Length: 331
Image 1: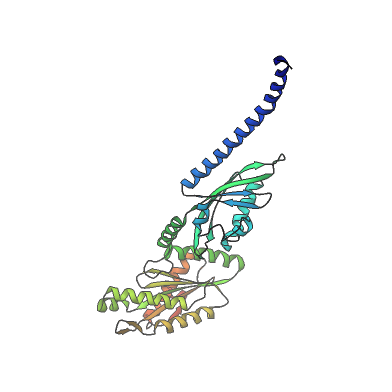
Image 2: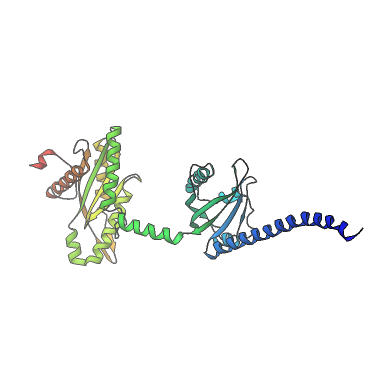
């Protein structure tokens, strides 16, 4: 065979080898690209996950596992097992967010939820992901994303919310939160034709305690009275501090006025118990005014005003008692 006859063979080999080399080069570049991408994400402090949707298998970066205290032998790659570690209160909303994204109803997947760590502590994460592979029919096959630890931010948000809606001294709801809850309760009562009660409470002779023992002692009394009030009502009721030694209580659902007066008597008895502050036993009592919807007012403002007016009448009548609002009090 002469040289000229061997040319077609070399050409044939080149035709075969060049595409193979190109594919190999592309694959190497692709792997390098994925590695660089994951490295960049982890460098930002995020845990990376890679979900094979069809086979329900996920790969998690070491930083992802470290975030929740796990190592490779603690847990397998089943996405179901990892999802079981989502806080029960957040699991449904997370599933809906992913399903909405995979079905095309949402253009992105972003969700905040809590994760149960290996040591049973709870961490908040911001979960983000995107589809990176589909079949020829457009069905999602692969999804990649990250989890970012946002626990510190969530704790700060909770503190700020508490400052906005809870009394700093007594840790019960403040006037703003009470008004919000009263508005919702009143809307329900009107719609369902139910009764509710607002109770306005003022401590008797509290000024004298502040004057004799100082404001620090007065603050201790307010804290203990707050706890006593909470212990006298249902979980669905609201105890709020309006300021100073004034409190309000919302009973969102009652069957009759007798229910409200029964709670009032329980409160009067509880508050009258001696309060020990260091070596001193202090005695306080309270006066309570009660306004019931719909008999004593049909809007939030009027119910509170009338309960307040009934409380002042209870004070004038000798303190340490409860009174319902009456039209005669307006004169």
